[in-house]
Amino acid sequence: MSPRPTRPAGGSQARGDRTRALIVEEMVRCVLEEGFAAASANRVADRAGVTWGVVQYHFGNRTGILAAVIEAGFASLTAEMASITVSAGPSRERVGEVIDAGWAAFSSPLSRAAFEILVATRTDRAAELDDRLVDIARHTRRLGSMLTPGHPAVGEVIWSALRGMALTQMVVREQIDTARERAALTEVVTAFLEAQP
Image (cartoon, rainbow, N blue to C red):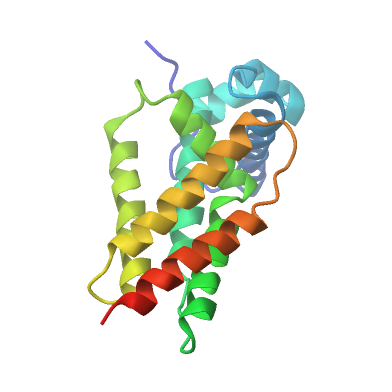
């Protein structure tokens, strides 16, 4: 049986909240800098300057920290996607704004770490996390509908392309500049939109 966190779920102690946030931040950094396999609870505790007991108090175990990172990543990504607006004007500008805003949300350190954790835990994660992925898909369809009513698949194509760029970033060590790919995606989506009656 996995250890359960002993901190009350609704606890609101300022110092405890800071410690919890620090542990989540260090898990994010550890996953991005050292990889998923290296991100053990002990390694993260060491990086955060806390003991294993503190980690156990707040999260129970590594799985609890990973779940907190994924949940924070979902919350951040969905909030950023929900805040994207599409301005009036030429299609190319509108599409570029959506793609750039989507990339900014998707390529944040928190989103990238959550994505890496989701890939690594694909076969054994909780079903409710899959439900959150459905929520994100709903936001992408909304983006597509904002660009062109009646074509929500446009948002899904944009999402798929951004996800591919993020996956590419996960498999290489250096930071990748995706500006060229995002510009090409803008051109492709714009051409599709302009061809619609």
